[in-house]
Image (cartoon, rainbow over all chains, first blue to last red):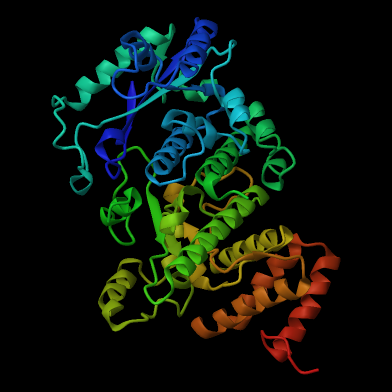
Length: 235
Length: 254
């Protein structure tokens, strides 16, 4: 279990908790749950929502990212940061929620369905990065608009373990540290698939490094991360 | 000051690597702040277009194999571009003559620096002047091969990565790399004229900041020519000679 903190965002979204799940066994049923939740009627007012619906919505309220297409910690961090940025900029969101915005930002094109298909959960997924945007323990002083909210004060660790339990309830698999050299992201990334998706095989930067995988991965990671960062101003 | 990006800026140190949490790569924030003298909607449109343009050019460079900083964040509505922090020094300060301070305030710091680095600031980067000039030429050739015109080539807009933050490839034998920065005035063009003017601007920058610049610029061109085909180089060389005769601007007569 790991987190990025972004103290410059409003405190209800200043933290991104994430975990890398491997050997995921319940991808098909998880996907069905998400589809079901997303087609549930949107509650109108206070009385509209049924309690069970809300609980179910919260239980799968994560970004599920296919970890094979994530090239580095910075890549993931950039996608989350740009999604948060869109969520606080009026009119900048391209999808309905901040979690789906992460998936959208990761995709090279502006097609939302395609971005879910490429980066989202599929029935065959076995390695997933699960992300939950949430409140941080400490917030930026000048951005503290929700300090008065009657929220019980929890430490970062307490929030983290709560989120971890929620994630473990949703996903059947084993959590591995992202930076683990043998089990972590480095062993999951499918560089061929990344290059194909971003059409990098014909680019001079990548072509000139054919046969030198280590250097090539550095370059591909740079390009892909930059592409995510500049998604909002892509032509 | 309610926007998240502005919070980030106010918590950063100017020209420093503050604000970012541990483990995340340090970031340089380039902020095109609001110009109060311009109409607000014009200002927003211009700023957005410039941030977007610079980001697109950087990505094009990355894809073409030109060494530039990677992009880490873009907030076009606030005029903010976040790029990778390059640990190193700009070329101006590494070549003879470039150390001279531009403002009086800097004199003291610079004096200290030069005693620390002994006589040659390049020693810390483990390359010779000739190698450095070669790197410049090669990088510019890659840039122009990708039809990107930098538009503001000076020795201040090139950085040398410090060897401690660079893992060299086995063959090249050079312990560092040259990184081009500041693509604020860049554009895409296939014209020989634009490439020649780009080189001419750099030649003038060399001449005005570094004493005895002629042989230095000649070795830059030498390395530049090696990357291009003979035909490409011939066209640019001829045009560069023309530009030298008439200056950067094309004559408006006739």
